[in-house]
Length: 241
Ligand SMILES: *C/C=C(C)/C=C/C=C(C)/C=C/C1=C(C)CCCC1(C)C
Image (cartoon, rainbow, N blue to C red):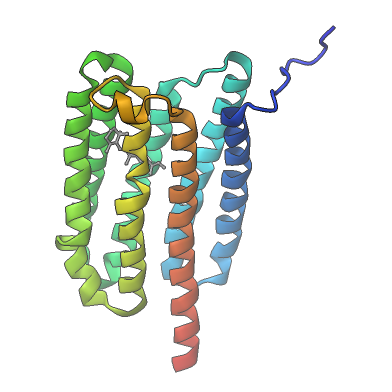
């Protein structure tokens, strides 16, 4: 007889395992970012708040996805994308916040947010609504992704980071690497989960494991870059004072 509303977790349920670890990692990171806010100068607090919100929003979704997976051994694409459509624009806000010292305009932030939403909405359509044309939607999504990469590596955001110099430039560079390498994990998950020319390469891979690894690296990693920027600028300010 089973008195518990939970089901037994198989020892080889790697997807369930990554959902579980994801919950804890996102929760721990959120507590860390929120509690660290008060140790820094006012100008960094919003950035850290946003870091904490990114991991917190993910944590809430992960708890839900974990339970859903445990009950049905599937994970609705819908929740995955709701999480992303909230957290990825917040990552764009992080770029804007750290570049504000160099005079970043709100238009840069909105441009990145817009591109990220285009990237995610087209990806969602390809994954959930029109998988028969997943390749075309994936391509559209990929183009938006490349424009973001261009903007931050070579475009307006890059120029502002160079103008700001010092620790801000270093942090900007680190975030750029996350977007170029860390975010590139997601299209792999997409190709693993949708039909297309790439079936022979990624066909047997598990989309949820790939997405879960991507989320842990990118959401927590982004937050740590911002945290490190706050630490470095605070200690260098203390040295010059
Ligand atoms: C915390 C969540 C993050 C950082 C999610 C990022 C998601 C992407 C960069 C997704 C990109 C995609 C493509 C570039 C093409 C295929 C469709 C997507 C949406 C998986």
